[in-house]
Structure formats: structure tokens, C-alpha cells
Length: 331
Image (cartoon, rainbow, N blue to C red; front, side, top):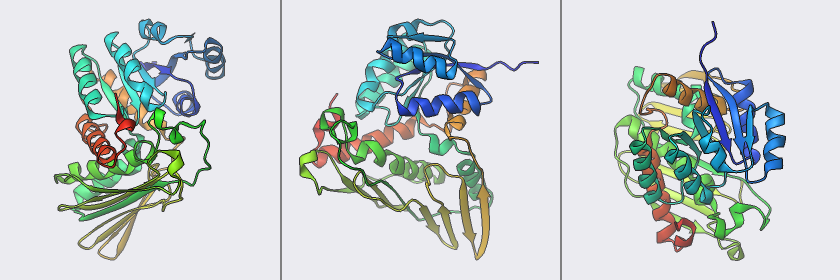
């Protein structure tokens, strides 16, 4: 007996699309690759050949009109997300859009309304929270009634300046806040939501060592409230790769590359509990989560929470705007 699978389309065929396609065809249990599209028809054909897609298109309109596609993963860089998302939602396609979903909060609100009006899902691809290890951590914390009062996480890699790479391009909404800051802020907001605590507006410091780049280079978000947070992001420095959560009698370490969590140690009153889940590329977890939602006709996700996506985008936009980088979030 063959279980029904959800048929995926991919829009935008850069590096992250390759990683997504690999997990879709090799590691997903509930999804399969149906169609791919790019503005370059030859690129679409080559991608289709590599990953054995049923169809390929040299424009996005044709993908939107493909009757066999259930959901489309938007893998272009973030300033190009909105027109594609709007196109696909308008053609009654469910959409998983790569993070950050958009460059400003208003676009998120507008596209969520469009999704609702068309009876489809629009979710942001924050894969971290779909990983089994992270979800098991939440189950463990709930079972043992664990609370935390501080969260520290960062995402930063030293990169050589290249004006042809979008993260260094202010005209393409480059910079650390939107590119990598989204991960840590999402983690903080998601955990606050889990513990039922409010997220207060953070104080944000942005420092630049290369002003000629004209983008936000190093960012620190400091959150106050019942759960304090220190979230770092950089496109020019290597930052610590473990996330640390602390509370009364507990310390939790999400180890190396915390944004792809595979090992988590919970030191609870002196006793270490280890959570280990090895993954493929990691995209399979969000693929199967979204596929399961569609197979079960569910209208919301408790994992890729749309309220948290909106909250995070609002924080990122305000951080950039108040620090003089409003051009990075323009619509």
C-alpha cells in the first residue's frame, strides 16, 4: 500500500534549493519533488535532471499554474520573496518561504491575509524548530516542569568580502540581522512562547568594522523580562556555536551548530540527560512537518508558528530601522 505523498515545487534554484532538494528526495517520508522553476530555463532543466523532478519551468508563472503541485518552497534571496509568494498564494498554492520570510512585518501581515483568503498555508522555513532533538527538548522540559531565565545564542561566520554576494549588498537587504540574526531571535521568541512569557522590545547594538560595506555587520540583541536573552549575529566574525539556556537548577547546552540541533545536554540538578537525534541535511524535518499538515488538512502549525514569524520580523525590522538601516527593510 503506497502512502499518499505531498508534491513539492521549488522556486529559485540556488545553493539552498540544492540542499532542500537532496533532503526532499533522499530523507523525506511524506514529500516528493514534482516541479522546479527558475528564470533561466536551462538552469531549471539541469536542476530537474539532477533531482529527477517531473516538470521544470523557465518562469515562475508556469510553476504557479502547475495543477500537480501541492506546495512550493520559495528559495530565492529574501528581497525577492514577496512577489513570488504573492504569485503562488494567488494561485491557491501552499507556500513554505525561506527565512527571513520577508524584509518587513507589513509584508508578512499582507501575505498571511492573502493566504487565508485563498484557503492555503503560508509558513516560514525556520527548520531549527522542526528538528527532532529540539522538539524532544521541549517535551523533556514540559515533563520535568523546567523553566529557564536566560537564553544565549549566536550565529556568526567570518566571511571574506565579496560585493557579488547578497549579504554584503545593501540593495539586496544584506547584513547580519536578516541573514543570520533571524535564527537566534526566532529561538528566543519560540522559547518565550513555549514558557508562556512575553517578549519585550530588545535593545540592539550594531557595530561595523567595514563601513564601506554599508550593511549591518555585527549585531547584539539584549532582551529583558522574565527570560533574559543575548542573541548575537555577524557576517564578519566567528561566534560561539552552542546555545545555552539557564534556569534554577538547570543548564541546557544545544551543541555545535545549535541551529541544526543534533545533541542537547540537560544538566538538571547535577544529572546529565542527553538528547541525540542525527539528521540528514535537516530540511527533511520541515518538509515532513508541512507535508503532514497538508495530508491532515490542518490550517495552522504549532511548530512553524506564524505568530512567532511575525513577531521576529517586527523585531528585526525595528532593529534595523532604529539603527539607521531602514533601506534594508524597504518594501
